[in-house]
Length: 341
Image (cartoon, rainbow, N blue to C red):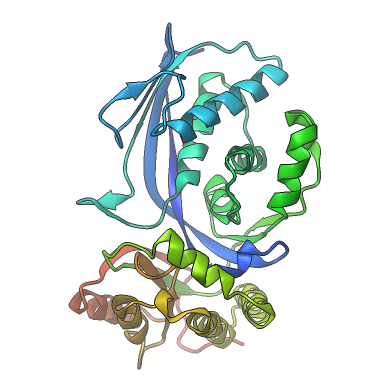
């Protein structure tokens, strides 16, 4: 093993399909955001884990603050040993918060920390960890902790790109974990699909940060309880249409697909669109831009697809006037004068 290794893990934002993706078999489109957390890892005589989230370090003695990282270490140690790797203690240091001045961006998650820890340990042992295996191991950490999230964030951050993700039955997998060993569960067909997308459509992807925290866990559960067949069917159709729009460079279909996904979120619960997120959305008016809330809603970020350079600049200006920061932008392809499709 080399003395010290450095790895990083980025963030994500939903383009379409948030909330519906919690239901197995539904699809979402998720954009990788290259704003990173970093980790340094090196061999040591005893385990030492330090995160800049906390003013103290720990070993593997259970600690509430470090439980997520410690459980990731235990699972990865078990996997490495099953692959014939001789494990040993290490010093792991994690830095880089997805926030500014104490205000979270809302682009990361506990999943980012899990993926970062797994990547660090794989790097320490020079152990190949393809994106799909990285995704599966991270899923198992969260599922063992009782997390029934969609795991879409893990798919996007593991693959580091714009992805379409079809969710699987996490409860069924949790049951299989009870009576099968790690290697057996990893070898199963879980039923998900992850595809890296390369849109033929030309647009600028924009992220607007409201600087407000997202809605609480209690409110998220209230929103989730409102999910029904109409929302699921409509959102799935919007997502599938958007995938077609990306592939066929159909600007009008992309526009309508994201608009429908946004309307369905609003119909699910008005709490998703705060005053600032509503302003972020309204800023599209009169422009060749389509905007919507992203993720849980009720704060954090919204996204926009701008189909002209001037439109991209104008919506950013409008956001700024409303106290909304441009957190990230990425050009996809070159603009055309006329819509295709």
